[in-house]
Length: 144
Image 1 (spheres, rainbow, N blue to C red):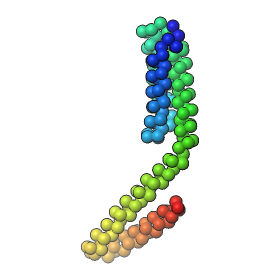
Image 2: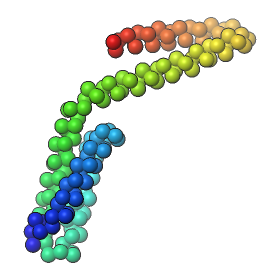
Image 3: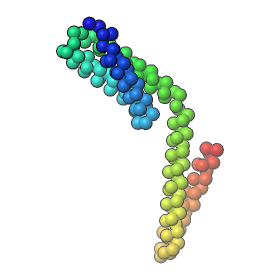
């Protein structure tokens, strides 16, 4: 019995490896995890399947190595073709985070103005807020 006598094993593991690679790369940002996981799981299966079918472990282990290398190639291609998209997504998230921080500091500044109990704290917060607004404006104009 050869590995080609197990067509369901071949196509199911192939599709599962591709789906795992795309999911881990694009969603989780784990670049080598799919290749390592694919090899480990299929290597364990390579030693378990011969107990139930008339096949040796060598072709199954070779197939596991092939799929691991295939996952690495897919990972490299995804990394190469999505680098601009990932950079834009990171910049967008950073700008959103800075805007949220600016809203928080603005509310804090208004709260300090309303209480106006501690003038030294008011001066320090005014300096911190003005420095942050300057940084926010300089940072947001650098992306345009």
